[in-house]
Length: 136
Image 1 (cartoon, rainbow, N blue to C red):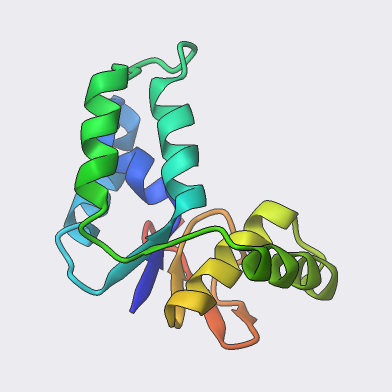
Image 2: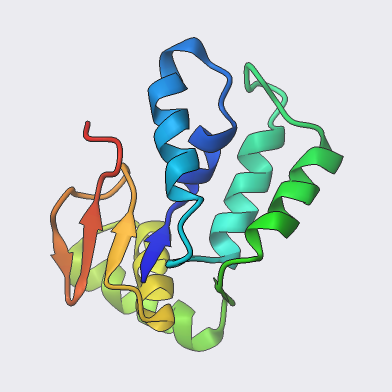
């Protein structure tokens, strides 16, 4: 299984001319059935998709509908165990807490790969490897 980071969801809704190749790729990814995500990813998506300073913000209603549609994938809840694991991973790998929480949510779901352009491409974080699906 592969874990989808927030940037994949955001590219999927992008109408920016310079992001259309990434938008197509993100939508291809979201057609897969082997994906998982987390409550954190859904929260980040909502905040960023509706942000007024975004050049193409979505309405609250549209974003809620998309979040509900994304629930077709397994969604890792935020638990105390996950928070503690993320704090440990933050220290171990010297990354931000939020990146560590993504990695630990992926691990909890049994994902071996995190699809993200925000973490180090190809790096293995104790059994969870990062792939940049956009080839940057």
